[in-house]
Length: 127
Image (cartoon, rainbow, N blue to C red; front, top):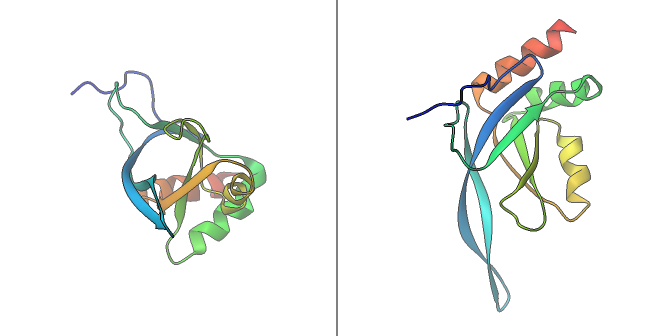
């Protein structure tokens, strides 16, 4: 197992691997395959696929606080429309995720890992 040699986390960025599965969606007579976000690997391997950078922004602090207060805080993976395997960004801001939903991007979410919650809380409290 070879891990990344460059740092995967700083005060404002964290390189995270998104874990996906594909599942069928049936709409009327149509069956399509869509990705589902099932989790996150916080210490990705060097050759890992599906890497995205979670970057914290000062202007989104209120969004982060509201997300952390939710019963189940979420991380959002925004995938490019074509191909859907390319991650455009990760965010902890529900508002930012909604903005991408209004466009052609696929926005998937899953429970925020406890380590990420603690990291974001530290960021909010520092500034």
